[in-house]
Image (cartoon, rainbow, N blue to C red; front, side, top):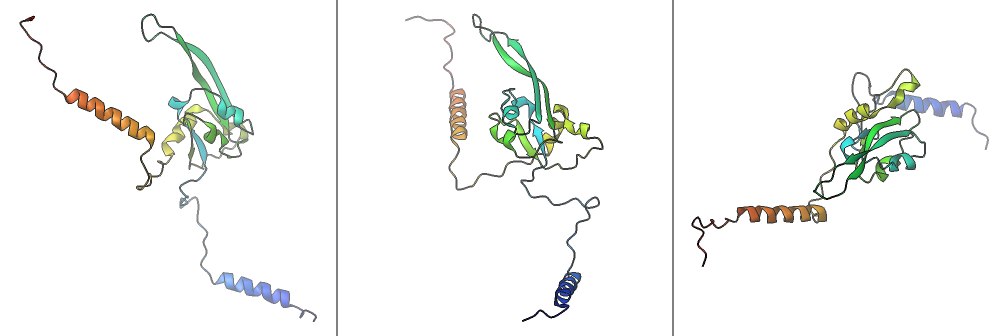
Length: 189
């Protein structure tokens, strides 16, 4: 059976008429901020205090968009007779967002929880060279990182929290015990 001439045009017009009568779902972005899902990938925030300059994030990045510079610093011995230690000090931590593909590998491999997803997405620049954000800017975005979701109330307590709680209870109990008063006369029997 041969198709009726103009049937394709009629189907197209029917679709157009159906969508014309529906309410639009366009959000007027600059005037109204979008309601983002909780796990939105915007930019990467740096919690600098947790960074030990282990370089795992830079080594695992498939785009090589993370730049880290550091130096070694000698820490004096904590106890007399102990030996000095050396530690890495972070000099530069930068991410080039013009290269970043937002895969999240750097966040996943960080063993010290120094990198987090921030839902911030308004960081457009007029020059591509300005898309390399240094650690000061990455630190600012840490304030926009949402809190982690609450634990399931039916789940068992994590081992780390249980151990810390037990240690704190033992310490509180030891401090609460009254100490016997010292004998002021120093009697020896």
